[in-house]
Image (tube, rainbow, N blue to C red; front, side):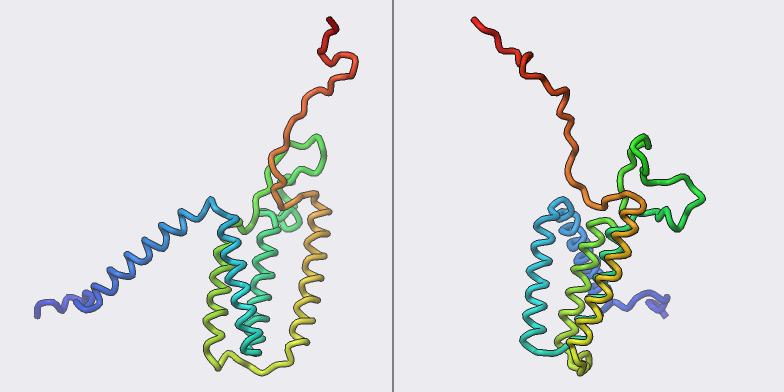
Length: 194
């Protein structure tokens, strides 16, 4: 019996090769998009707008949107949190500077921006595809879900901001700080009278 050595069938080989080539091409374009964060987020916001228009047009799939909102809130918390939470690991020395005399340590996110964007976009695409299948259109009273999501958002963000204040960190890069040098006085401006 030749060919029955447990290998893949000959008909699946082209499909497997096609999937590998598609995966490589997808990863290539994903890698090329990495430094262009503004364009990536603009594209994601356009997709989110299309998703919202789809939900408004079909007037349904509110449970899918609620699940998407909870997932995105979870991603946002990971994006705003430090890699090592000083509250959970008090045995080590503080990883974030707490005094002016402490050594500067950059803020390292638990969820990097690229992974945040990628997970956000992937979840949005999955939710969008789900809106084309009627089993996911569970009839609910959507204002209750919306109010509950806003309550969760406010409580979660309040806790996160309190954590940021307590450990004195800002999870956003406000640009490179510039040294202005010594300020010169008006008398020593360097101009000479001729």
